[in-house]
Length: 236
Image (tube, rainbow, N blue to C red; front, side, top):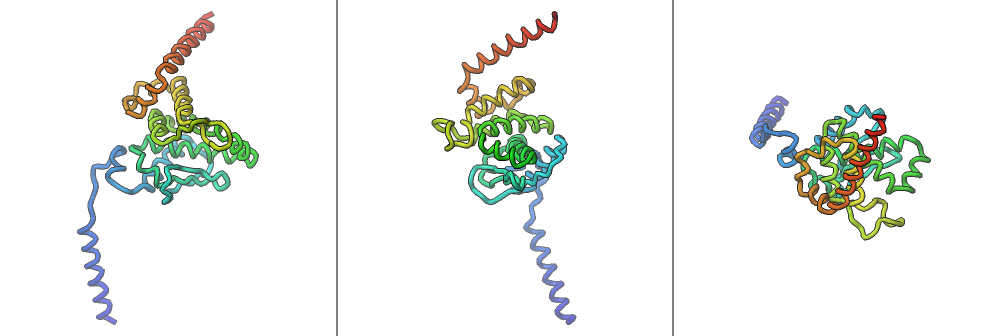
């Protein structure tokens, strides 16, 4: 018996030594190099999820997990309120801000599903409107939690589809370009300070600006006129 215990202890010591030799300590991690230096997606997703929940005082349960599905997607089950971040989308995420949009968008779906089965049916029937609403709610969540909402546009531009048309029952989501334009207008009106963010130099954001160059000029002009008229009315 004693001999067996001695052998077991010896083997454990050898095992411990092997683990120690193979361990690599990463000491210079920050929010921008985490993805390239570690593969700990669940830990990072849990961290960002908790930040969104705490800073937005979300009072509903919204479980968030990572699955091995290789599809570039994230989904929310309206019946269980469980959010699934597919592993296939992780390779497109470059920082916490972009991840915050993915989680925030799904959190908006999960929180709204608590309004009852009738609301779930309405949202599924009118899914395009539901997606626009969740995009904008995600932007609110991001800003409240200290994330840059320009990253929402960058992330969406990386993977959102651009079908020939966005009408009918075949497409549950609007065109990516229409979602991007709606997000820009929302940020312009509610969080204009972020339009001078360094993230506006990102290639994906620039692609959006090139695509809507004339429309954005017209929108900004009309907004300027609207604000001027509002100020004149308030001065009376």
